[in-house]
Amino acid sequence: MGCKGQRPPEAHPPIPLRLAWANLHDCSLVQLAAAKGFFKEAGLAVQVLPCGYGKEALQAVLDGKADLATVAETPLMFAVLGGQKLSVIGSIYTSNKKNGIVARRKSGISAPGDLKNKRIAFTQGTTSHIFLSSFLTANHLAMDEVTPVDLAPEQMQEAILSGRVDAVSTWDPTGKIIAERMGTEGVELNDPHIYTETFVIAGHSSFVNGNQEAMRRMLRALLRAEEFAVRHPQEAQAIVFADLKLSPALVAELWGEGSCTVALDHALILALEEETRWAAKHRLAKNVQMPNFLEVIDPRPLLSVKPNAVDPQVLRP
Image (cartoon, rainbow, N blue to C red; front, side, top):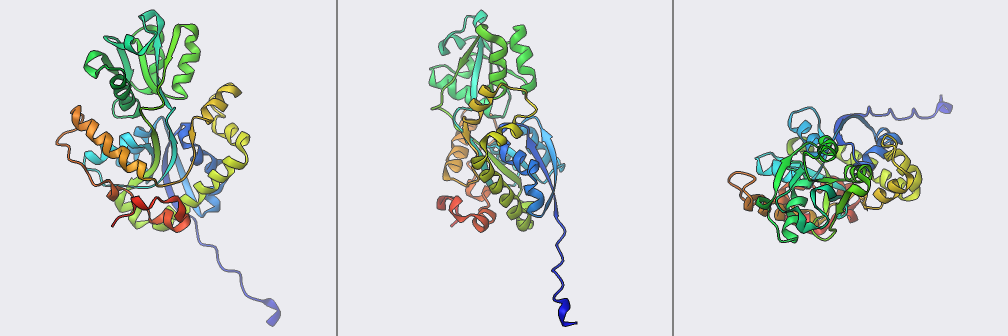
């Protein structure tokens, strides 16, 4: 009897989690965690719901189709202004080069000032919206001096190639693909100094608060993906861009646009506040009052698994 030893502890069943993610390289850590089995190893049974972009992913959470979403700070800000109680457990990507404008030379556009009185496509309530507004302001133009055309990202290429619009404000890789398709007929207009995009993991506050262990496991998996991307960049790029059929040079360029890092930084709070002022100024939301965005950040899970990834300024008093 004494030789039988102790019975091994029973493994706990994985925690089920529905994750809506934007099928963009902003969400590289999610793609890597799923492909390399890091979610499973962290004790999660993740059901992944691919979406075209972050606003769509967040809507899946708001509609009850997902528990968490990957989303940029702009749709998050609009949802909070709309009364949604949301919590962010971490950012997963930041970039000041992700957004840009692609224009038609045939429309007489070769410089930012030529956008005046032109039809410019963008996607309402997304990063392409605030980038367009910021780009115009930086070049002494206003939104009412152009004709904005609200389009879904997948409609951008056809719209500019057919001449329905003169330019598109969008994110990469959509922008790079359109510019490559247009060749010498396309003009890329960029400015890395006016806007920084931050992609985050967010869900209903009630869900995040009630499922802290699942949040910790999610972040552990994403931190493993972050480490994998650093140690094996070429394999990581191959996984992330497998479905896009892009040239190796373009993949390397896109990969270098931003930082795939799990963190909670005070810059996110500042961006949300600045974009709230922008939304109020342009009357993009009703009865805008500045939220306390510290209440939108839930630092507990990340503090538990990687304390030095949390900026002390995002901690609630």
